[in-house]
Length: 178
Image 1 (cartoon, rainbow, N blue to C red):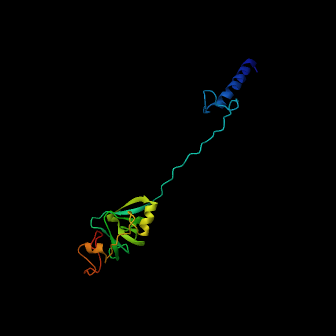
Image 2 (cartoon, one colour):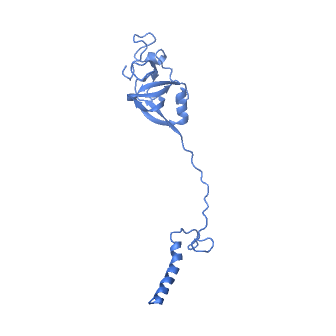
Image 3 (cartoon, rainbow, N blue to C red):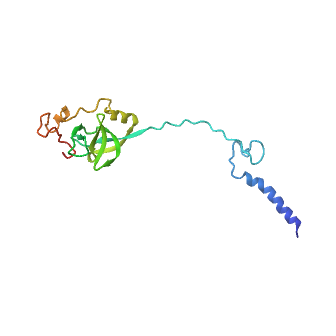
């Protein structure tokens, strides 16, 4: 050791800077400089977290909204050859059973039964879980039963002048191409 004073000064400088480095990055709590709880440099008072109310997450599901002025045929099969179960009016909501369309058709719930509508004449939207369950059970959003439209029902007789004895075998002339 050539110069013991230099080594002593270096050791002393390191000893003095260590507590400062240990305290770096600590967040101050309270008045300036009072970031310790026991007066010991480097110790921090345990944080107390006040419980916060978590807002309830609204559960949603998907439905389709009919976008056809003359109504939309609701069918038993995903085909224009499928039996017409009824006519959904413009703006009606139907519970969506499978989110993805398949070959241009959506699988929906109609009057509590599985049915199909043409994807061309509907738009998918989110509804509350409560509303979805009403739609799936066959009730409309206003709390009334689903439309009584069927090939022999009153809504069918309003469509293109067809009624129970029409020459098309009960098929409705509406927006899904048939």
